[in-house]
Image (cartoon, rainbow, N blue to C red; front, side, top):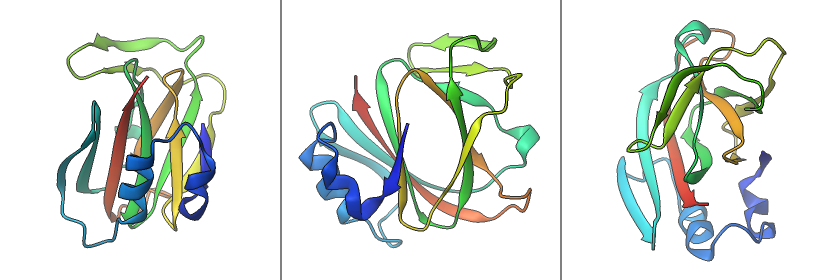
Length: 148
């Protein structure tokens, strides 16, 4: 997991130039939708209300790395290595996602928003969309998918 400010995104050589340009040009007014960036790299922008802790699930992907950014609002993102986690829903190849039970150890956590991004590798389970202190708010989120 890499967590940093968007102003530092160019420092990460594993992030393609097309992704950096796309992210640098994001504003709160960028429309919701699906964006093809290059080859198999794409981004989805969605608006939603953050969820209570008990309504969120740990998930992981096999085919894509996630870069997650909020253009409006804030949310909590918990994360932990998938090693040893109990699978709650088997891998769905079409959706590139599998879900896990809550871990027995305390996961790491970050607040997304305020010009931060999270770069999430396939070996990292993450629990997105969580309301901070269980106070639900509306957010606008960008998820960029980069093939492994």
